[in-house]
Amino acid sequence: MIRHWIKILVFFIIIVLIDVVTGLVFSRLTSCARGGDTARNEYICNRTSEDILIFGSSRAIHHYNPAIITDSTGLSCYNCGQDGNGAILNYGRYHLICQRYQPKIVIYDVMPLYDYLQGEDNSKYLGWLRPYYDRDGIADIFKAVDPMEQYKMMSQMYRYNSRFVQILSDCLRSGQADDRNGFMPLEGELDTLKIKPENLESRELDLLKATYLQQMMDESDETRFVLVVSPYWYGMDASLLEPVKRLCAERGIALLDFSNDPKYLHNDNYFVDGAHLNARGADEFTRDLVSMLKGALDNR
Image (tube, rainbow, N blue to C red; front, side, top):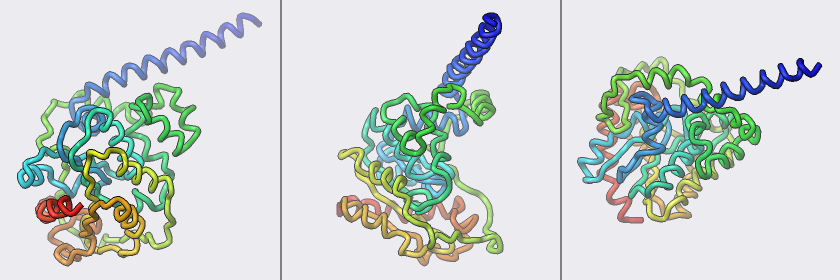
């Protein structure tokens, strides 16, 4: 009987050791990644130093060209947008950045579904923050999203779950420099037959997302925020922006709304789908944005 329990104990010790060693190995691989989303996430969380940072979802990463912003303002710029993510991830990343320095300007691309309306399980927004769970303030985000996450995060392997292959692949890349500063333009042509605007009218306010969007805006007194709604091919119901309009009004923050700009509305030349600009549209939109940016900051 004693021998049986010893075998069980040894088994669990081996499992714990495998978990710890795997976590240490992939933590090191993450910090050494040469390219891909792994290196990009590591750069955003640990190494950014640019004057202007852009945050938001896929509409941020594909719509804002930092080179044009730098040429126009003389300030360095990096695009921190992330596909399929909103206020929860963006607050976590910005919180980590503010532990190192305060950027001069943050441009935040607002997408209602990801930033303050109810959608899918909010746990999906935690993935890119898991490697940094032990950093100051990050565990609080996990606990707020799902109290069970604090127990799952006791496993080192869980922190890299579903990304093992991607991390290995990103470590084996050739190490090419990111000459676009986080910007990933989309190539292609619009197929209007495939456009299906998402119905957001029945969505209720997600207080957790809204809270983190608010906390991000309040994180640093030294950073000037500008919130932007970039163009949609099919436009947007203006009433969907009321929650963010109130947040901006309370803080004296500029909100630049291009969602129904006639220059882009139903303009097939600028889009790859109903919600995403192509490379030509992104450059054109970025030029339009910087022409308004100085005035928005001066009027704060």
